[in-house]
Length: 427
Image 1 (spheres, one colour):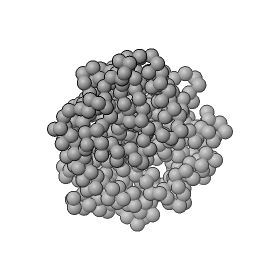
Image 2 (cartoon, one colour):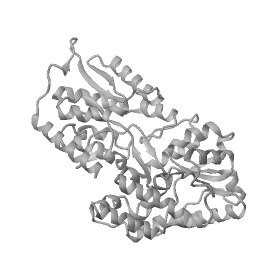
Image 3 (cartoon, helix red, strand yellow):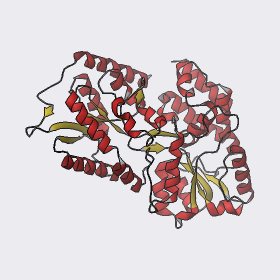
Image 4 (cartoon, helix red, strand yellow):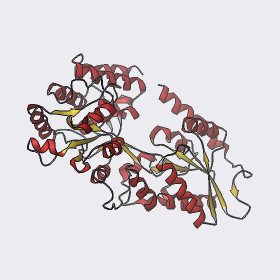
């Protein structure tokens, strides 16, 4: 309800904004030397490779375009969205602004505060899959281009350990995967290092993709709106995977007392054959293992009988840059020129070198580790919704705690599904 209330409030404010119309001509427009000046709000205050890269590209753009100058205003992340909402309500949005997908962009788009990028969207045809661009789509219009992608569901594995039990390639199906788990357990090797102390990994890393394999990507929104039920047999089947793997001794016994980073370190030390995590683990794993060539990465296996697209992987598009709808036609063209320059090869290659997954199909040279190249290739199959980025906070708490209870034998998948449906119906 809190999330819904925020969205409705933001939408109301922005509808009022659109009705006001007009633009503060004194604060926007051309600079004294005749160049079109565009103000860009960002949250790039922290010293991170991606922030430095972005600012360097903008500086280069300004040098190469005397007729267009992009001026950056940096706002701390924890203050950024509050300021954006406040300024939107007062019709004081900047020319360009950092935004994030889904419910965080929709109110701005629905209120008419930002401009559709449809006139230039073909610029990324064949470069960024439409399934990823859809993260910034509202009612058929595109409002931003993603710079990066955060994947939550990857399987990292020790190649030598898998070879010990007869696997030269990672299993493609869940049935084959269970045979691998069984073989590792019989060999005395812990199959999967899991750290679920914070109770989110089983939900975000595991069920976000497993659930999508079974139910399809439209299930969560349908369940939230009452068009579907969390007691759907396909969703129960997804929850049952966690129950089945637990009973197969797939996880370390102390899974609920280790945090995510600790379990990753156990994998790095070689005490388990696999570790399920997101793209955030690529850098720490590559930086810590003695032989990076011995580490492979795979997508989740396919599930026979599932209704979902078996190629999708759970993840979310990263931040993009939106354009204010209050710009003049000349300023809009300048903004479009900037976006086409910014979201190009230099940005994506720079992010890749920082071990950041990108949505674009770009060539990678031999200096890029194979594990990263493989992980990045999986986004081509499209993104499945991440559960805790889609569910209400109340439902997120229920599934997080419920999945842990399943591993402890305190709750069945059917009981958890029923509990989630009861919460959904209470709204």
